[in-house]
Image 1: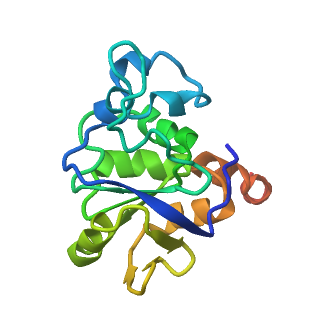
Image 2: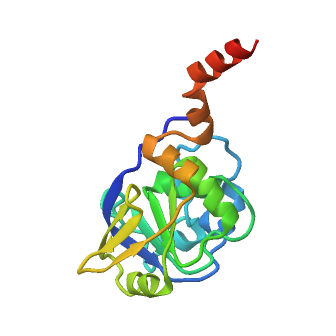
Length: 193
């Protein structure tokens, strides 16, 4: 699958300070009836954004967010816990996010995010607290240098598994990366036949 190559993103942040946000809060189970990604952004954090009648909640931080200028979600610790569902990163991506930053991101969510083009960034607690305290601040996430820069100064490094990093930089998922090496694979197999 071809993805948007990831280099550097500079964006305003959307801050969601709650801890232990699970995948059912990111996208409620009733929206898991599709195998396509398109349109899932409208279901992202649905129960936090809409009332029982489907009307937008005035109190929701997501209503009124411009996805073109707010592509970085800063979340409380243990983000993405709960059941494994690729629909969670799909919904966040379709909503407009490209990066989730937290002090702790659940491993299964992190794995699903990386395979689908969403960058999960884990930063130190001090940087995390600074981001949580500055909703709407401008931040830059540079995958090449593996750094987060915060408006007004401050920088933090993050680590990412090298294969996943390469896939994101090249704009491919893991299978796309392998398929991109098909000529070399066939050449190797011919030489061994």
